Length: 380
Image 1: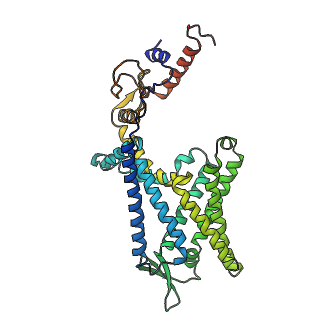
Image 2 (image 1 turned 180 degrees about the horizontal axis):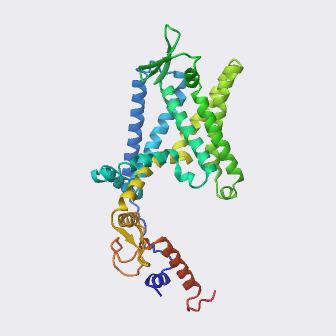
Image 3 (image 1 turned 60 degrees about the horizontal axis):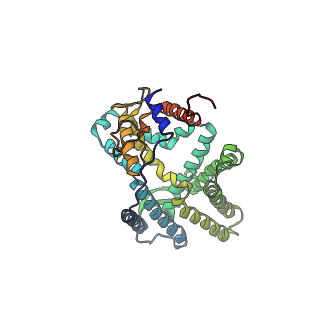
């Protein structure tokens, strides 16, 4: 019987002998620092709103609800994101990724990798490999939300405005500077004034596909949670429907119900913004951080590779395994596969992370057999 199997018989699962040590003072200091980051981000955004609207001169007071909710969302997202980066797992790989990014050697060798990783982030090829239906759904929702935010926020903050020129054209201003003039009845004018309707229709397609999948995919139905999975999609659907209803009411009903529809639309948007830092769509904020993980892994492939302690096959960069061991120790997890009195550490002879995925499955199977049949008769 191999050494890994023998140790697995003594220890059916990776040991978790070290308990997490709570450090209230450290946690309190970290939380306070993250709160200050959030307050600073809110103050910076408020200053940018004042600057871009020329001292709130071009700010529409009727949109104050949107602005307050956005400032709160930015503060909460900054707080949660900075707290997330302060955790040992994310913090270690975050710092390592930035060091690799600014390395001249890596820049010279992997110049094409960075734009490809960014392109993969926006095209979401990792979802495309899971299925065309899911990819189309995610692309519609991703670009619908992203483009809508890129249009809505500058309009709300007073950064974008229109003025009428003596020639009867509309002049587009951004952040207090004139950009270009256009005829409102032209194709360009139609696209500019209906840009939010176009992005809303794109988002609507993605939401319809998402709801169809949520209600018909048995694998999803069995694990989905109403508050975490359904409510965010329902809020987006309410925003889309109420926003399109505003356009329909203006174009076909003469604005008869505009006040009620605008109030409902504002309520839905505010609820979605407030829930953004704490719900499902926070992964939109987290996802860009994964660009550095690909650089971290690719650059590690040219360094020493970790060999499996059981079969001897290379399965991961040694740098990645060592960082993983250090991170596990920092969070109070000991995955060493030995029962001695030596203090745990990444330099010990055998860790669970020293086994490749195939050998981990074999070790689990051997440990299960040993637990069911300790006499060695292999009788189940």
